Amino acid sequence: MRVRGNSLPWITSKVKELMRERDFHKKKAVKNNSNMHWIKFRAIRNKVNSELKKAKKNYFCNKIKDCVRVKDPKQSWKLINNLLGKNNKSYNISQLKVEDVIISDDIKIAEYFNDFFVNIGAKLANEIEINSTDFTSLQSVPSRPDIQFKSSEISTHEVCLQLRNLKTSKSTGIDTIPARALKIAAEIISPSLTWIFNLSIKTGIYVEEWKKFLANHFWRRWLSEYIAQLIKRSKWDVAHRNLRRGDLVLISEKDGPRSHWRLGRVIAPIASEDRLIRSAVIATIS
Image (tube, rainbow, N blue to C red; front, top):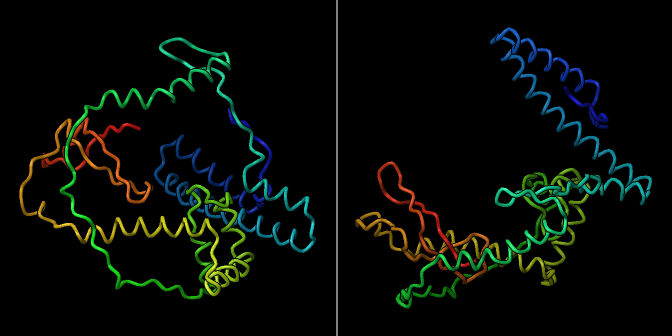
């Protein structure tokens, strides 16, 4: 049984007709096991998904333009809350199974979660053996005073292009605005953003959050591009023993703090088809 809810406002009559045609071919394909209907179903299904995305984009673009033209703050915030997903219902955990015992009391569920996350670090730390390996032999990275950084002004087209290329599957940034909303309003907000960016470049005054983002961005590129060139690739020419259970390793994390590497213990080496260890399960203190 299919439960039908309220129709989405951006679904047009054209999209509805395609959806009916899609469902018809799927029903025929399942019933008769017809390869022809399966091919038609897949083609129409992809077309329906594409038309839905276009219809939704056009709907919100028109709504944003209407809000700007009419200057209605109430309707504008209603639309923004809809884009941010604040109108969606939240679902609470009604039951929790702990060691074959079902807990339904809200206070006990909260206490169990608190106890689990408070003690998980200590439990994992107890499983890691203490090792006195000395890392003082690691060479420090040489400085490069000859490298300079210079910013140049950007165009509205570049800003608009970057907004359109945002990945909607990624989490929101420091502004807490979803990427989907920025993509839809790219043409409207790109001139204002370009003016702000170029003003910061001219005056040399940057928002504190921008500085943090740029520092983290350079740190990630420095780790992945510059540091890799300093490492002598002797491991590809000289045979070394594989990682073993209990080995102590340094962990390079993409989103970790700058100049900080955590220590970890190998608990489960993972062998490739050629029996070489290229990945492993690592346990850390936290």
